[in-house]
Length: 173
Image (cartoon, rainbow, N blue to C red; front, side, top):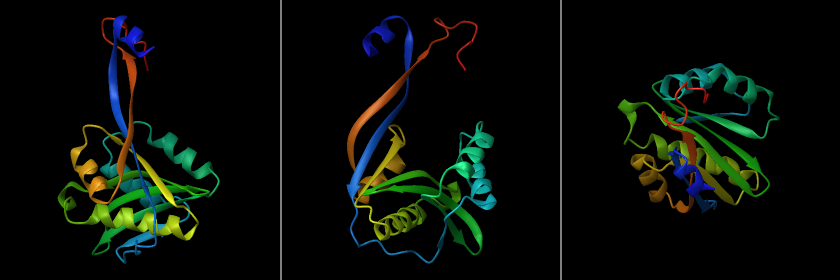
């Protein structure tokens, strides 16, 4: 299918790497990270401030607020200010890690590691023993952090989207 879509003019988009690692008891809960069992407005506000993709944030708010509580919403704070956020969901022995964002001026200072550690500790306490995440293939800083923390690439996937030549009216939404 991928080869056919390429031949008829669909472009490859959003190369994504899926990574996993086993969870052990070695992750301590950092004091600079607070966890919320439900999405609070400040978590959404922080996500919107730090995310490059906020065009669907009203939909995200609705979806996360209506989902059954199986997740956690993490806020990292420096002197009371939210400098990063992330979320996770636990299902049996699996822990999904999502939306790790750190303010640009605070990157490279350990905040990403603290947000990962907090969610891994939370998941371990709930029986999760394998963590997974998805990261854009071109996001080298995030991939470097995750490899440093023991995550390994499992597979890569991508989408095919109409190119301007195959969708001149821009009908693809």
